[in-house]
Image (cartoon, rainbow, N blue to C red; front, side, top):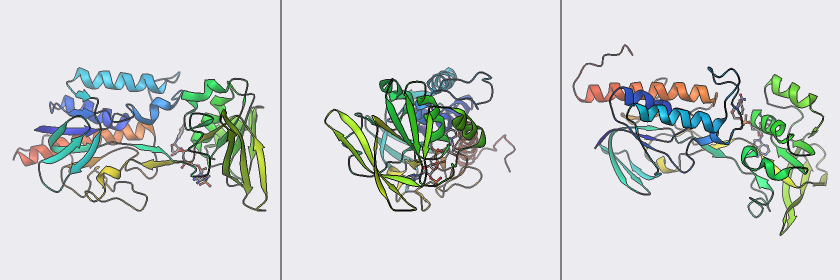
Length: 314
Ligand code: NAP
């Protein structure tokens, strides 16, 4: 029986682990299928306080994991596949082991949204990618497309200009959603081009890989073919909540609903980070939510044990 099981090792899960471990709750932390989560596929994180020159996403993950382990967090390579939150203690069935927990912190993050068009699945790894940091190098001297108009599309597009001869950003509207400073950098970069008001309707290629995209202009409905060696898709994320359906309350986008203290509708189950955040979705806001979830779990456990919680949360 564990006091706290934490699901996920992104900034939310690992910050929760640091706080829970320092509270001597010996948290068990399940790494999940993508240890470190989204930050590990981010080339450089420039807005995490404390790193004036930025930090590589993977390095940030490794440092946080080390820090959590230093205080006694037990980090295991396992992924939850089924949960029972209807009865207390909670049960978590994972690929390798089963766990029982008095409290659970869900920090399972989100996965990249897919285009869901013909050819996309077929050419994953052969020109279709969701990670510029992982695959950018393979496009040295080649021509690539980035789909999306948010921070990820522009930031990753700029990163790809290090390798590609040209990066064409295709966006469904005529204005970017990305922050102004990223927009300015993109406009100033001569390798970046833009195709507005357009969506990808098909990925075209041969066995060797992607050769072109079929595009549709949403204003004129005109179709066109755009030659490219690769397409990087950054059109948002889908929360990793499949496992929790029917166990806790989700909203219409499948995000976990929490109150301002990271509590879900099941007492003793907390959630933090991209899995419950409809607005901010930053490494630092996820870390903050992870801290709050761990403090709330500590308080929950103290109350369950009939002890007075020493913190001043009320
Ligand atoms: P996002 O902000 O949700 O942007 C998704 C983009 O994809 C939008 O431009 C959207 O178009 C477009 N889109 C959505 N579905 C589409 C579809 N089916 N077909 C074509 N286009 C589609 O996602 P994100 O860029 O991944 O960013 C997520 C969060 O992380 C944001 O809060 C962002 O600020 C944050 N982030 C921050 C940084 C940073 O601070 N350096 C870096 C990366 C991400 P519309 O604009 O028309 O909706």
